[in-house]
Amino acid sequence: YSHESAWARGQAWGLYGYTLCYRETGLPEFLEQAEHIENYISTHPNLPEDLIPYWDMSAPNIPNEPRDVSTASCIASALYEISTMDVPDAAGYKMYADSIMVSLSSPAYRAALGTNGNFLLMHSVGSIPHNSEIDVPLNYADYYYLEALKRKRDIEKGL
Image (cartoon, rainbow, N blue to C red):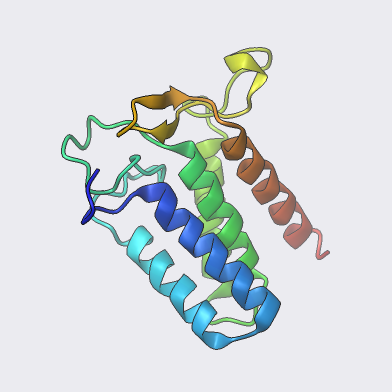
């Protein structure tokens, strides 16, 4: 929306990226930054109850702004990854990811089989400022959703 706003998918990619940096390096500053971003997202006053963010957390017409499931699926995948690490409240990260996945898997966001161009998730936003890919399915939303499902399954099976 603006230089001072909080583009939701950018926040999600930051959370995801710092989480993977920590996983690969073990450097605590990466985990600390991921935790700061997660806290910013999870406590943001404009985060809807169903945990599917608006495309920009500071957009001017909330609650009449498009939601972005690509953001939510990326956040869930990162949270599952953090929950496998030796961190305080690892179980809390998993529970938060589980809550996001419940919303993503609901009829409000999960497309019926054979609809939605055969994409899994509905309601993503590519770029509002460029008037491009607004309220459409996006391949990276499905990617992070499938990755999150795999991580969830692996955690629950003890893999």
